[in-house]
Image (cartoon, rainbow, N blue to C red; front, side, top):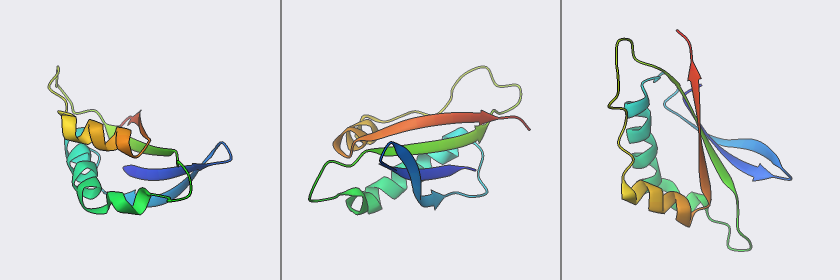
Length: 94
C-alpha cells in the first residue's frame, strides 16, 4: 500500500497519486510524503472550491522498537492545513 493521496469526492476517497510503492517504514514514508508535498503541492489546488484530501499511509511497525517514530515537522503540518489534508495511518502486520 504505502502512500495513497486521495481526493474526497461526494464523500468517497478517489486515489489520485500513489507514492513509495515498495516502502513500508513509517519514518521513510513521512520523508517521501514531505518531499512530494514540497515539490507537488500545487497539484492539489482547485481554484474554484476547497478540496478535501486524505493521505493514507500504510506501514509495518519495526520489530523491537519502543518509540522514536517519525518527526512530523511544523512545515509539513502547516502545508497539510493549507491544502485541507487529513492523514490516515494504517498499520499492517508482517
